[in-house]
Image 1 (tube, rainbow, N blue to C red):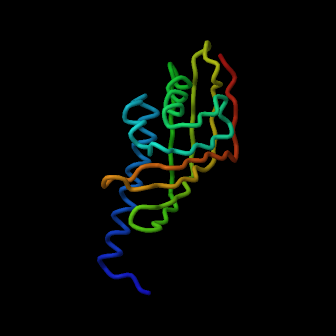
Image 2 (tube, rainbow, N blue to C red):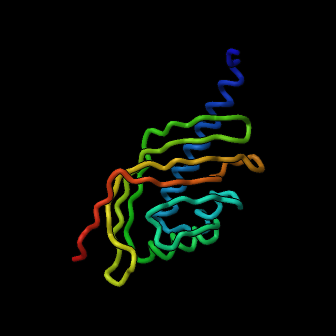
Length: 148
């Protein structure tokens, strides 16, 4: 069945809203805006970050873990050319190629690194706003940066 103009516009608006959501994700991490960061996720967020040392299982654990890892660090996170699929009015999924650079202070247990990979995510629209309901990070390459 061919998509109507109205359906196409609704799909494109949803795609743009999800792009903006992920842009806020990267900015919130890099600027350490943890309240903004927490608000990007559904209450029942599912996390799969194989490299995580703390293995967060809930949204609140994930936010606390990120805040702890990035405390005192300088980070740069980029997401590029996403493949976003709108499943229906309230569900979507995407794959985001990513790059990050994290420089941690000497006393940090979290290592400085740079890396490339993909976020594979699912989204749910709640109360008129798209939120991340599942996030998975897989790395193609991760290079630990020697402490200075």
